[in-house]
Length: 167
Image (cartoon, rainbow, N blue to C red):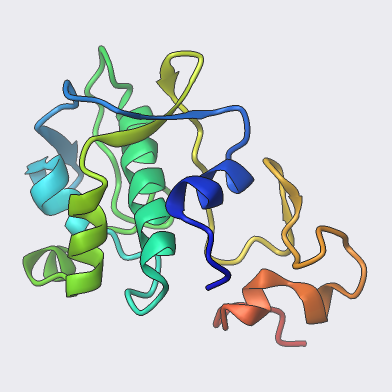
């Protein structure tokens, strides 16, 4: 909402990575309980980690992080282990993949093939809807970058996370 593009957002959360477009990504990945699914045209469309009402650039950053996470998890290149569909990996919903919101479909399509690399391999793009305020990749996840007055300054609060501190 402040005008950053997807690359700016990704740099903030995943420093020391490079954003690259790859033409040799697998066409499909094995998804537990579903078998082989098209990476771009099914699996990513079904990722249910972020509200599709969020800013387009945030959605594009999420699509890139989700694509990168999936590739790292399955061991690409060179391996093809299955990925789970729960919060233990990243949430996949077949119903969303069958009829994705337009904004999410656009974010996935506009970032097709884009991944974050670290040392030539898919980066560890771990993420969470609600991290509790401190991220191992970037420190305090607050508007001012400090832990001061966390409740008021947390991005999770501003994003209206349903899991933000309730007590």
